[in-house]
Length: 216
Ligand SMILES: [Zn+2]
Image 1: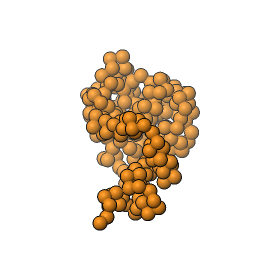
Image 2: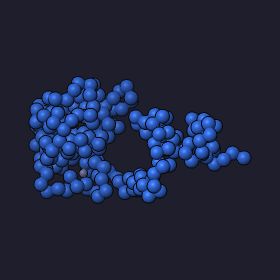
Image 3: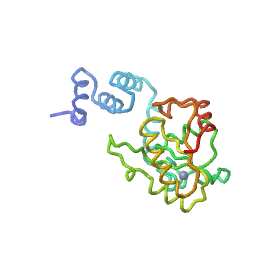
């Protein structure tokens, strides 16, 4: 009879079991190695590290992952990751209700907030236009954004997509779409490396980019 762990694990995991790694350890290595930037070697190191950790610490990690999936959802107004809907940014009275910053992913909000250079609202597209990956405007939350533009009194839209081909194409598409409304459309400009990723920008670089945004 096959052991349950061997049955759960795909081929890569069965290799670990064959090499004398216990089933649950192999299953954990397999799951960890699915995470971005974590290869089989790092996954193995992390799994064996957890074996040596106190039970409470390992369970706290497991609990945090469960809470993440059970309590976190998307804000129905801006699509930020939140526990409350609408999110804390959408409901904060001190935020500038006339400026909206359009970002590709929820984590970009976290990055921009860290710079403390921006005090308006957000809208998360859920990706960028990428014909190579088969992502067109209809797959993004552009419809929802246009609806917001018609009911909220924005005077400026800041497009903060990454400074690469897809990010630029998305910014251009949005600027053409918004132009007839007369709302100013600006784009993060100075300081961000071309072809780079918003996620990797340091706080000062991102603050400069926000200050140096230009009208499209
Ligand atoms: Zn929100």
